[in-house]
Every structure is written in C-alpha cells, then in structure tokens.
Image (cartoon, rainbow, N blue to C red):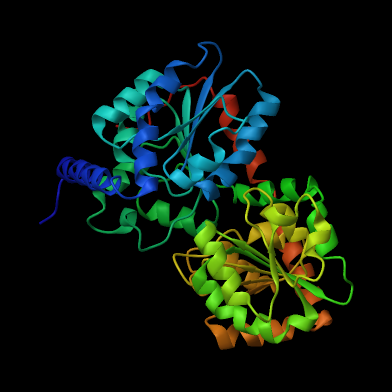
Length: 430
C-alpha cells in the first residue's frame, strides 16, 4: 500500500519518538547517549543567550567530518561578514565534544530530537535568517518548520546515490524534504542528474568544500617538535596510519613487524582510551617499540629508539600527515573510510580499505593514480611493497596532490551564490 506523505511523516515522527525512548534507556549505561541527552537539554538556553543584533546563520553538521566540510564557509563568513552570528549544531556527541568551544561560532549546540514540537521550539528561539545543512543531513520536521517560516535552506557538499530513499517509489516524504531547499549544492554531476529525476532542479554542482578545507590546513600547517625528531632519520621511511580502528590494525600490523628496520610508524587511533592504547601497544610488541605522544611531547628525546609513535590526542592528525611518505586511512574495514583528502593534500599516496563505495573522492583518487584501495591483509601487503619503491611512491604522491588541487573552489561558488541573497525570503515549498 502506498503511503501518503502525511502518513509517512506520522510514521517518521513515531520512529523518532521510539528512538528517543531507546536513547534514554541507553543513557543508563552508555556515556555518549547520556552526554547527548544532557547536551540537548542545554540547547534552548544557549540560543536564548545569543546577542540580538546581527544576521543569524545556522549551520548543522552531523559530526566532525561534516564540520570540516562546513568550516570553510563559516570561516569565510567570519572573515567577510564579521557581524554575522554563526550558530553551529551537531547531532553526534563525538563532534560536539571536540568542537563545543570552537571560537568560529557564536554558539555550539546539540541538535534536538527531530520532533515537530522540538523543531518549532528550536527555530522560534533561534530565529535564523538561513539554515545550512552539510552533506547528508535531512531532518523532516526541522525542514518543514523552516519552510513554514519561509527561511531559506541550503545543502552544501551534498552527494546522492541511486539507492537512497529520495529515489525509491515509496520515498515521497524524502522528496518532499528536497523541495524544502532553496538550493542544493552538490559534489558531482551524477548527483544533479539524480535529483532532477526526482523532480528537484534547484541544484548547483559546486564540488566539495573539504578540498578547500584541507588545503587551508596544509598551507597553515605548524611543526610538531616530537614528530620533527621522531621522523628525522633519512634511512627510514615514515608511514602514518590515520583514524585507525582495530580492524585496520589486524590488516597492517603484521606487515609492519616484518619491515620494522625500514620504517618509522605513526598511528593515530580514531578513538582512544587507556584500555584501547594498552591493547594497541601489546599488539605492536615485542617487534615494535611504541611510545605515546602524551609521553614525549614535552621531551621529544624520549622517543629515541622507538619504532612507533601513537598519537593519543585530538587536533594534530591533519598536521602530522606532512611527515609521512605514505598514508593509510582507517575505517574501510568498518563503517567506511575517514578523510583521505587530509593526507592526499600533502602529495603522498593514500591507502584505504574496501568500504569506500560511498566516497566519490576515493574512486577519483584511485583513477588519478594517487589512491590505493585494499581488500584485506594480502592485498594491503602487495600494495605497500610496491609503494616502498620510490619511483612509484613519488609518481602516486604527485598524482594525489594534483587531484586535490584540481578540486578547489567550492566555498567560493557557494558563498558568492548564497550571501548576496541573504536577506531574501523564499517561497519554493508549497
């Protein structure tokens, strides 16, 4: 039976309420769930504390990756329109925890649950002049509440695939969400064509703002004294394993042990706590002597004689890639790869796992000759043995850097298009 949009919306909202109940139960045992519930209770108070003057731009990011995509636009706003009030919201506790004190925003808050009542309260308190969602974020009740108030809504760095609900026969509610956007800025032509097939034509192919962001980081990179010393040996090749998960380590650690005489290794776990770090050190031992960054940051000489440096801190990974000659990016043996552009911008080959089909940059980097997907341990070892050859490594690194440079400019396209229209209301949703 085909559901009407109204009925689908009711089911959607019922699902949100069920999820909220599950979240409250999870909060009794799971720290992240408890943190999310506590943080959501503080959101309205934080919005009420905002100064009244100035245009208000609300940008919503699911987590840290989406924050990095939205950051170039927020930094452009802060630089070019300093009187603008920037309100940044997160869905994920991991994003909020790391960026809750980010000085580029006037307020950083949790997004409330997507119920009609919570959405109305959030928007009526904030009174944004526009809303910007990053990449994948589609929350029906927030979108409808914004539409009803004729507040312009934008999506940036969007990417769409045929299997998503927007393009299914039963996806009427999702297509209604698309119609709420004043304009969608997408990464590629394939996304534009898909949206057109669903009846959405207010689309601009602008590219991915992450390329602008990683280039900004690379240009402003700062030296890290402990890594300067640790990576100083010209006889050894430095490899970095960024956003590493245990499933990644099961693939690459055996090979590292067999090649320790030729390598300097930096491992940056995606998440870490004392138990996680202890386990990682045991897996590396006895062949690889490991030290933690927190142990040597004030005395880099303590790393002398170590084979592996474990980055047990946040905020340095994007700068640490400059020390590597090859990067492995984690997540590809789990939910999906992390940010490969952060490494590729330094002109080094990038290796990553098989769960990369949702990431256009993975496919394009491979096609350019700078990216190397691997399906398992044997595949990984074959690729790494090839990259030990300096000729291939340098050729692949050049290709990676050239690929990033070819993708710059999305922030400029979006900012030039949106902000001259900042004071206009839209009536595109019926």
